[in-house]
Length: 272
Image (cartoon, rainbow, N blue to C red):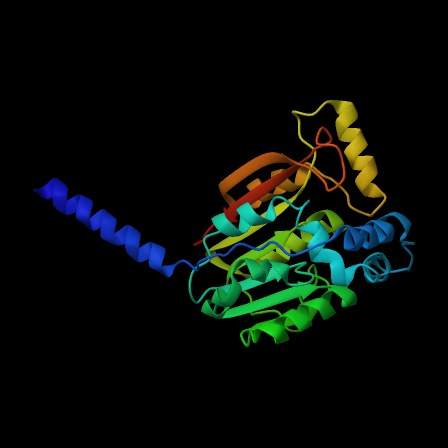
């Protein structure tokens, strides 16, 4: 009898926890061969110029911003599992570092309104414009945008220190030169036991050395720096809840050419 009551208690508790989770939806933006050609042209022939990090990113993205999601959704394989497993809960305060076009919000659809507050932080004006259009189209009144550097602890518009439930960084950490400062800022913003969820390209010890060098060199042309130290730093500063490494393909590239990517979910360690 006591075993049945205990099992019933566990079932009720599980259902209660599931009710608190914000439901996700499928997100598969439409594309065509013509739109892909435009993106590929911008990728191959973009002249990266400028003196500041922001200027360099803007010069790279400004001609492909409107088509960014349609192409990237088929090569940024870590986003879907990241969103599914980061356990977003109703009334969470969510900050999306390097949120760009705001496409991560599409995985929640109309359920974005279940968040108490969502803040997209990005340094690239052309991507932010797409995010603004997305927010207006969906009438997401609880979403705001901060244009600026995620490493800046004094950036206007960020939530107060220790008030954030969830921070995501999807395929942005490799594009931040002083990436450790971004993670320190994320840790500062999180509540005790707040969650950080990150996915990005990487190199892995399971690869041959020549494969590691190949991918590092290839990505470096777009100022994307693959770095195994991301995981080391994350594990030193957050309690690891999940860490997976998988391999993903790219549109129009033979399937034998796969690059590793990681998904890391951790918690801010509560200090007394």
